[in-house]
Image 1 (tube, helix red, strand yellow):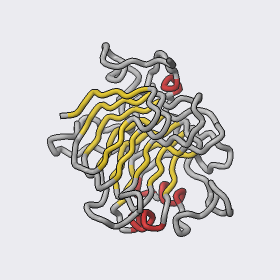
Image 2 (cartoon, rainbow, N blue to C red):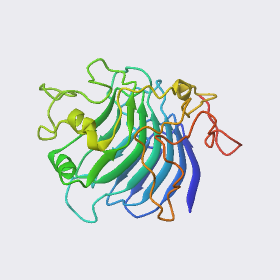
Image 3 (tube, rainbow, N blue to C red):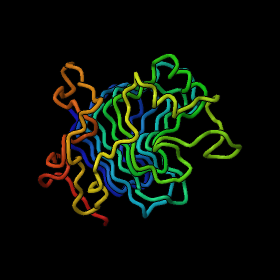
Image 4 (tube, rainbow, N blue to C red):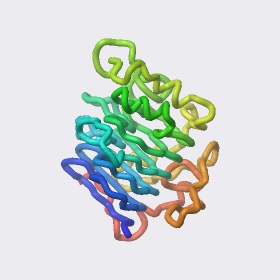
Length: 258
């Protein structure tokens, strides 16, 4: 049983799942110097209630989610295929020297993502590699019922992604002409990219308020009743509202710029 774990001021990822099926809830990450949540090597567990707060003091290529099947992008099985619901990913809230994505999904990963809030990254999403784009087409990589806001780079379209129409990163086509923006905006996916979640307090390093002013129920999914997921979390993000303080209540977690 893995829950209520905080990693902060890490020099690498806060959490990385190297294969396996472990389930975890209530994971908090602050001030990481690489990715917040990373999976590879066939990881297929379940995750719920994740929060990330990045630091603008580190200008590296730090992503919220970074995903691989393996380092070679092979089709080796078991394929990485976690199910993740109710995550709040807060980026640096600034346009810094290097690119950060809320989600960098690459190297043949699969995943089911629902009720994810992404705010404050240079871009919300990048699908990397044709094999990962093919997983979208096969409906084995899904991103639905989520909200994207506050992308910080002027070249990003509609708070979502860079147009891949150029010859150099981040505008270079690296996924076989897959269009992230059209995918996210597909009506059946029930995503939002033009609704302010009102979570500015999430970027306060000392006394963050991660929850939105009002519960983000529009287009949200109800988690499955499978014995692990909390089915009451039928809202976008890891927090029901500004009064939901599971990550800041009590002495188990510390939030500080130091």
